[in-house]
Length: 147
Image (cartoon, rainbow, N blue to C red; front, side, top):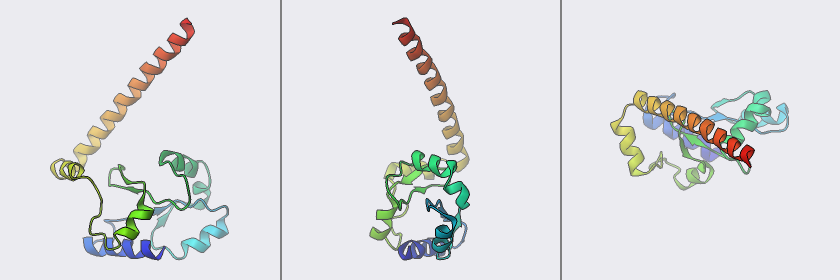
């Protein structure tokens, strides 16, 4: 946690605003007392412990393929994964010089296309994927029924 606190402070100082880099802690502690003991050392936001220990925490763990605790997932401003391995990346780049650790192509896209456009494209792609899953799921059920 000390490395993460230092990284958090450096990211916010470098950007000049406290709201440019944010952490939202999703605790998988077994009880509220354990949550409280850890959270007193942190400067960032947290999902309420009841939600983090409940279905929402379970969903997030599955969505981001959490295999062990602690896990640190970093997302960009529109919810795309920067890394699922923040726990190892931050100690290797404590000053954040290489942050956000993206491929050159990703940096180019972020530079050329405004956030609003990227959000629009992301939502359109999500809609197409949902439709494709529904069609493919229906076709698979139809093929199984024909057997």
